[in-house]
Length: 172
Image 1 (cartoon, rainbow, N blue to C red):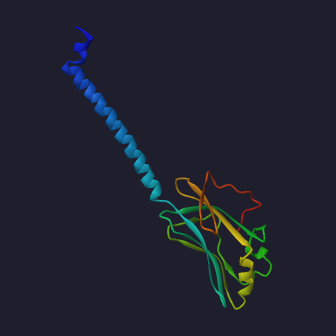
Image 2: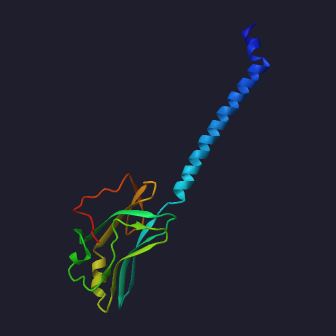
Image 3: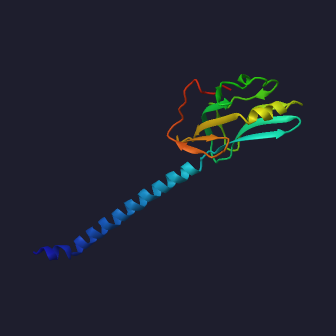
């Protein structure tokens, strides 16, 4: 029997057809799994935004909101005033009589809000003046360990992981 007749035999045609279909099926399965994983990641994507809310005569606040579709695991907050790292709001002289909430190392659910600093009173001018010199940075991750750093511009930047020196970590 010659080689040509082996490839023309019905058994060989069926075997090659089955192999071809198996390869296509494996390719479709791999593509489907990749699509499912991408969908799963997108369905729990956090997006933190830092905001300032105020009324010139009697109200001032900083807050963080999660406008994403999944929880944000906040790994750290970094705050500086006049280019100097601060550990707590009271490190800024004359910051008095305010309410605060812990921001760093928290889990913020989707559509959740943290009011980091709130002042109600008649002397908001100092807070407005200090606001011009304050920078805030947050690093957060999704439940799939995809991480971002954002600041008051609210333009997140992808990072490998959230690492900060303890000397720079905001404690409140």
